Amino acid sequence: MAGVQTAVALREQGFTGPVTLIGAEPHQPYDRPPLSKAVLLGKAEDSAFDIDFDDLRVDLRLGLDVTGLRAADHEIDTEAGPVGYDTLVVATGAHPVTLPGSEGVPGVHLLRTLDDAVRLGPVLERRHDVVVVGAGWIGAEFATAARAAGCAVTVVEAAGRPLAGALPAEVTAPMAEWYGANGAELLTHARVAAVEPGRVVLD
Image (cartoon, rainbow, N blue to C red; front, side, top):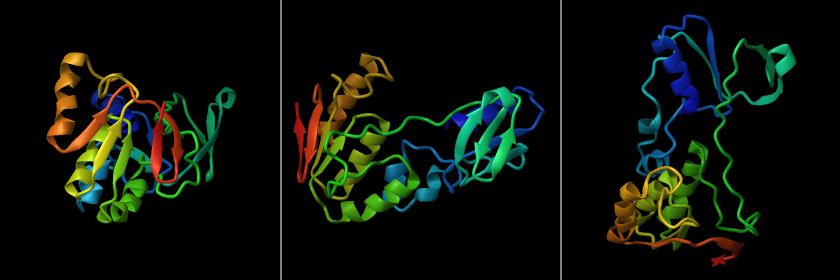
């Protein structure tokens, strides 16, 4: 989202020079928060940004990994060779937090990309008990989809309320009530100590 919005804002503010937008994923740029629900409800394309990159004169390069930065040379390295720049915007987002003991444990999934969401579709069809770690935007969207699929859902959040780092308490307080109203259990002040086969251990 940040990379796309930067490119759009440059054109809206009158910048006429070349703009290149590079992304590692092969998919058209999409909005992450509604991603899980859109994919699981069979509406994956709804999450793609409705932007004509050709009309914006943005050189969109998809499925291309950036492997390095050489600031002194004003170049980034990619699998397809170096790309020069005058100004570089790094909008890579955050990596998901890896929970202690979660690597290689059956039934543990990360949700960040469109491909991650596609892999989770069959999981929800089995109507397993689901634990969602994190009551942010993506956690809330996934909890909604999991409840709609008939899963029992528990959401664990380390902070004292949902979206504590993004919104003020007066906005997020009603959101905490939403979980219970939709049949999901929300546990706040709940840090994950370890992940074991079949269960999440809290501190």
